[in-house]
Image (cartoon, rainbow, N blue to C red; front, top):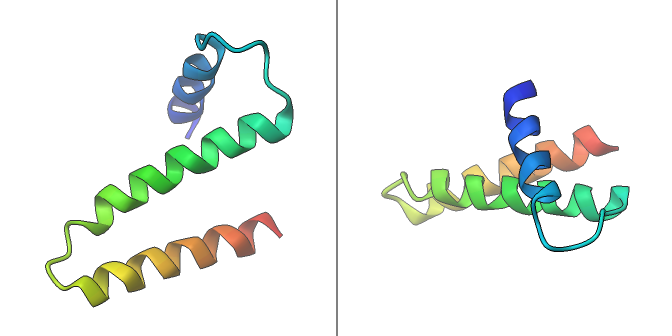
Length: 66
């Protein structure tokens, strides 16, 4: 995932904000990930499957962070 992380950090560094702390950077990465997952969930025609997809991925993220 080196290319993806590089792109995220470049976007963060190119922002008008001063250098972010680790927590701020982590939140921006999580926000980007959530946006990406929301887009992928829209590929499901059944709204229930879209919600299960999101719940499963958020659960995976939480377990991985722990």
